[in-house]
Image (cartoon, rainbow, N blue to C red; front, side, top):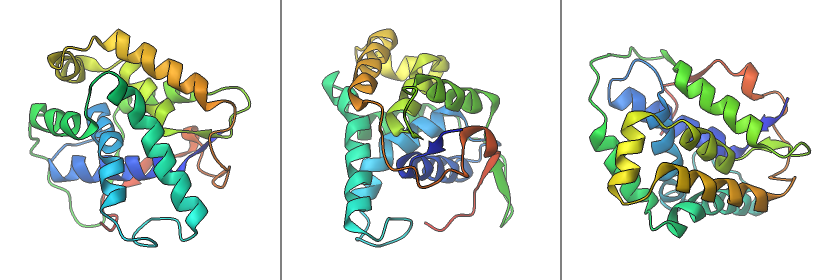
Length: 197
């Protein structure tokens, strides 16, 4: 069972925070997409060694490289991750679900399916599910909201998906050190919504 990269875990955390903040009952694929698109901005706004960041310079550089590799196919299609993040956030209807302190927020079926598709996109010898795999898994079956937002920028979803698949091919078989073997895709049921910000 492959592990989840540090970038995927952070994007998932950002997605949980987004879902909680907007009153969604579950982490939906749209919240996960927002987490991925916001990852680079979030990383640049945090001091070294800060909240949830690797303490070693090599780990921090790898995390920044993962975020950049994930954003590259978006930029190549003329899509700003920050603008996409805001557009999807705006397009999402605000939910009315109220979380109590310490509650867990689960992934929706569509979100879980995106993780499964991400795992299927990995090279057989890859050690981790990378942010780029997860982006590919989401864009493979984006749903109405993501399709509408992406196509509003003049980009066809299938064209973006092809660009992401090409970028995944460039990752090669190794997409990061396997530090989290206990956190495989099938074994994680939920992500805590009350994580520190």
